[in-house]
Image (cartoon, rainbow, N blue to C red):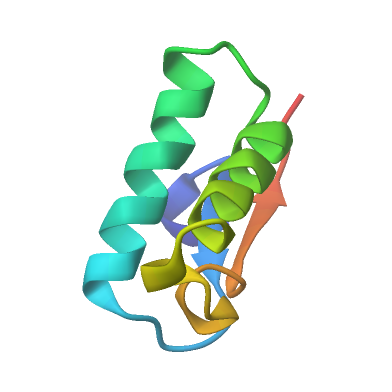
Length: 71
């Protein structure tokens, strides 16, 4: 893993900075405030973005995936 990290959220292609900021806020909100596991939180954040006209294009949210141990 990168720099000794056990787990990462990574993008598979170059992504928009503002879209990434929105996605990551939603992702961490889902995990920390709503108690969801990382994979469920990422999916929920992606769905929330897809439901908004401004962020509907998959280029804003579909690039992200989880790597490592997420028990």
